[in-house]
Amino acid sequence: MEEPDRIHLPGYSARGRMGRLLGVQIAATGSFVPSTVVTNEDLASLGCDSDWIVRRTGILQRRKVADDQATSDLAYAAALNCLQAAGVRADEVDLIIVATMTPDFPTPSTACLLQRRLGALAPAMDVNAACAGFMYGLVTGAQFVATGNAQRVLVVGADVMSYTIDPDDKKTYPLFGDAAGAALLVPDSHQQAGLLAYQLGSEGCGGKMLCIPAGGSRTALSPEAWAAGQQFLQMDGRGVFKWAVRVFAESAQDVLAAADVSPQQLKLVILHQANQRIIDSAVSDLGVDSDKVFVNLDKYGNTSGASIPLALDESVAAGRIERGDYVLLCGFGAGLAWGTTLLQW
Image (cartoon, rainbow, N blue to C red; front, side, top):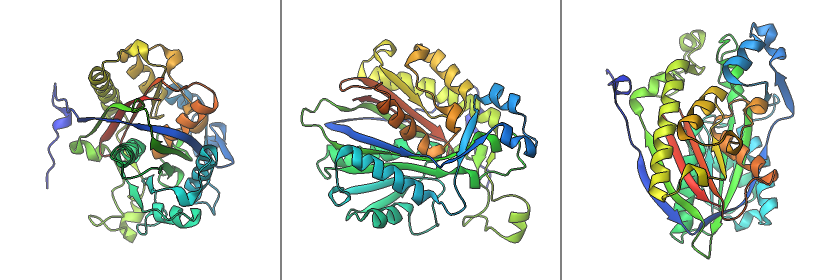
């Protein structure tokens, strides 16, 4: 069946659904990265050009899992760090959400594996919105807290991207890394903190721009598909770049306008760490000072669903966020899907 190619029509602009969730705050964050560091020079044997990687992406290195590590292992370590920072026991958590596009298995969910390993009693579920996954998980978890249906929601973003990329794809393989990040959502008794405005959106007509063709019910991972490399992520880099810059500019403006907050009032901006040029272009369009933009892309590359919570945890550790600050978060990726929110910390 032919899919509409609306995303490329001149002037086409999709607006996501806007919302507001007060009375929610992030009590603590946590993260974890594998110990193996892969530098650009390490990739030279694969034919990757270090200068090209830096010039085109800003990435200097990334992390890679050990042979015996899976997504749930990274998620577990990040979740433990988060709960310890919050002083909360696993059996006190009411809901676990894991945002991932690289689950340990098609089923059971990675969230259920995490719940068992933590020793938690909470319901658990996965969310798959790729690089926007943590934003979808954050909004979903905040709904439970804001409505009084949960007191403590653990939201984890974790991905093992190194297994999804073809080493022979010299323009895509250097971009991605493995990591996990977590945040614990709790009620804010003063009803001031929370998501002052958020927007979730999707443009499914651009799905083929960033996809793994085989391994699902549409196309089985047959020997023929495997031989053709259809188990690996395929990306239209130029198309995704243009879309990401456009969608961030539009959604950020929409979210700030809905909250009646100016770019100058922002304390920190954390974008999905996909490409330094995307970050620079998007922030320039928004009119935010570069020193307000947190970047760790150079150290970790694109970690998909882990990207935003990893950067958020490092921001907290660096003392760059205080209670009451305005923090803008935006994730965008395969689907095509995105999520943007303005937090009052």
